[in-house]
Image (cartoon, rainbow, N blue to C red; front, side, top):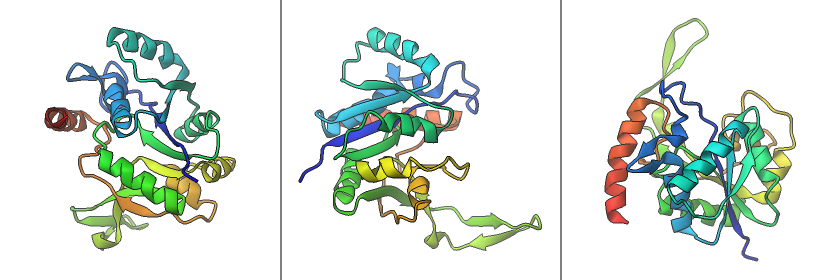
Length: 229
């Protein structure tokens, strides 16, 4: 059976690390907010898929005003987020009806490629889990308890991205467990229940906008990406 595809886009940033006046997902790049660029990628991948946007409750009205201002029409359901990313994803999952494949994606990753999205859904369709990763290029050092550091073999490490795609029933089940501060993404929530996750190839341009430098990089890369569309 071919399962429906659903994407939960989580956008709860406040822009503190960027020292921005507005949350980073609402900063405009090339005439529209970052978050709109992100949603449009998933629409280009599959215009029929269900999109669930999770926002802090106090940002929902502002988002609706932005949609009017920019005549942003891709259909999407808005869900109020929670105290942490974990709780926001859990709230988003309440709008998911199994059976389905669910992608959870950071709203401030507008440069995820359609190819990466496809690889993740294809792998999850066969294996129930799919997490995009890329190779590390810098040397890695691990801090030791005594305040020193040791070299780490970077070939044994990967940098993790989103969307992370899972069978809906599996993801709903693991999100019933108690919250832990060790949950940094959906893969860590799944692994906490003793379930292995499967890695797939991501794309290096799939930057998560966290700092001003990230924003500048995305602005440049998005310009070239838009020229290809």
